[in-house]
Amino acid sequence: MIRSDDTGKLVLRVTLGVLLLLHGIAKLHTGVAGISGMLAGQGLPGAVAYLVYVGEIVAPVLLIIGLYTRPAAWIVVINMLFTFWLVHGNNLWSLGKSGGWVLELEGLYLFAALAITFLGAGRFSIGGGSGRLN
Image 1 (cartoon, rainbow, N blue to C red):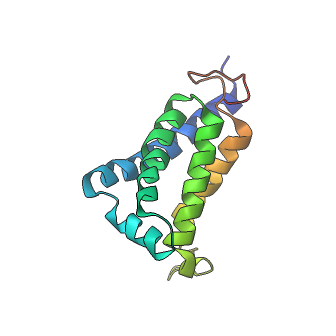
Image 2 (cartoon, rainbow, N blue to C red):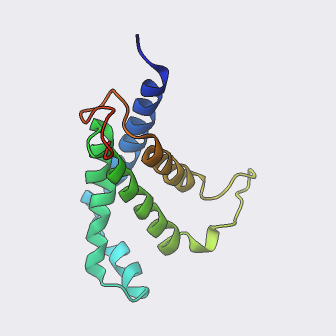
């Protein structure tokens, strides 16, 4: 019998992983020069921008397959917090024309990743449902 909570964890992991991975693939094509500039503007080394590949390629792949799921989700949380800080800080409390939060997509990514850190991978994963890293 399929347990619905494990199925829900699978859906959440794969959805978040695929959606973030698409952003990472796009950055492979466009590069991270813009991010490097934003980091430099905040006094951080521009080379830190390459960590976006960890947050948008490596971590999403780990989420999709369900391996080291909790650390991968924490990486996404940290990545999204940097996104809020560097890119969207001025819009944190803004609403769009339709009344929704301007940062609802980023917020969904952040809170979905946070939920995965608490829920873990579930049974339908390479790492399995046991272990503190999954």
